[in-house]
Length: 378
Image (cartoon, rainbow, N blue to C red; front, top):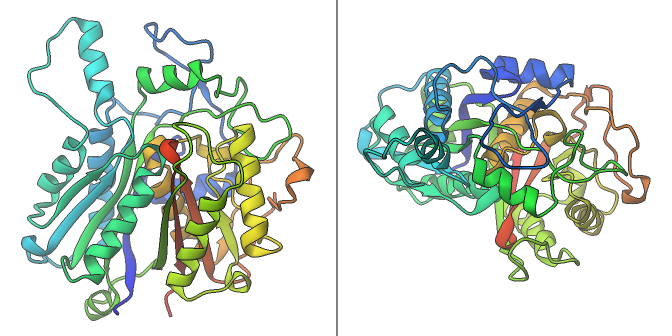
């Protein structure tokens, strides 16, 4: 079976636009959510980690995805592959809801219906992909699943190149739902802090170019990391709450590690789902201890960029690819009061990646769980 490798990266987040700014922001480990600039949002907690300097209005998932896809394709320096062998898989939770909300407020009737799957369709049109085109929309795990589906398309021989990732823009409906659930932190996104009180949303998109390793080597491409294994599961427990024992979370991690042929001792880092909600963080921490014994260090990405919803899994994979490629783990955003009862290590100083394999977790409403394993290309 031919290995699947990452050869191109494109990203927008509160750290700015481009993978270089994303990595620099990871190294600085500083960010602050902004007061929400939306007079029509009837919510109690109004904070957001927005994409800065974005001038297109409204800011939509499709526009974010297109910009990130352009960068990823340019970064990969693709060699004009057969369009019939190019596929697209994009994950998004809210799709184009932001565009519909903007039209509703302005009184403008939508001239065209823009459903969730239009995000992937727009990326396919951009890159001229005539292979499979899919948009995955299972909430906050969407883009983790999307990248896993992309890997399957390559391994099964259905595609030679897949543009995969996720995108999410601010949505009044999405924020309102979490506000009604009482799941928004009034200060910032602070996973694994003793006083964590919910999550804070972030905007953005992360897109990756995936190829078979033999194709990438033949054209002399830069390979950031190998996508070595993936695991899926579903709690089948509750619409929004995680199953308290974390049994299916553990299964998805174990499946991904088995798929990659690695053991807990091979893992140098975990990029957790870690939303900052009290129960989710506790369940994931317990699962990490059960699966890995003494868990390796964690890199808490949402502490830096917020919870990017359906794009969160792809953001985690992109961060893991950069860490694997550079061989360094950036510092975590410092916690005011780390929750020592969770027994997790979140280093606040940069360090060498001790073992070149990283696990990325993404979980979602509906009990959807996905774990992915990335490792250094050898």
